Figure (cartoon, rainbow, N blue to C red):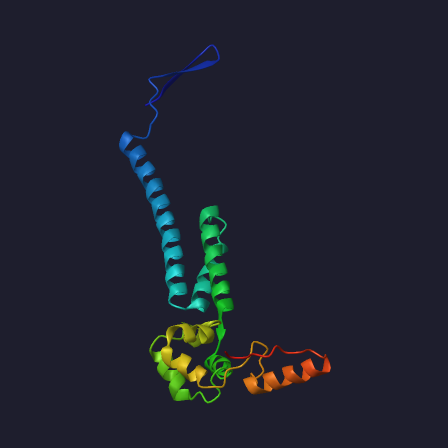
Length: 200
């Protein structure tokens, strides 16, 4: 309550009482601020965890939408921004490594096994011998899955070895008799005398 009096042009205030926030009010305000901070942190952590789950599940389009929405927030911390950017980069690298369709993978295998059948390919695929991922509903195979198959399946190795062996240059190796005949002809032209082998 205020009591004022004017003396000589000077206004004096007696028994002034100003309302101050109580301790409970201060605690409640601090608690609300802390709660809002915790909720914001949990929201950002939940967004990052959700994005990681989407990437692991092969739902790249949904993950990209969540990342773009989160990165558009000005209040996003640098740590969360870096983590979300990393998830975007992880998706990009996965798409680089897994770029083969089923047709592409069979085409590469037929370079080693020309008579490869779709049933044979499906059996190897079902056995988990051809590494692949389902990304946004598309089955994409690892770029080295066709070559890795011959490290994982003896049947695939036998199917490849059923073809005639080829030289490193890709040409069929000639019989040893042809090689020896060519060597003899060359030696005659060069007047090379071969040592005569005698048996005692």
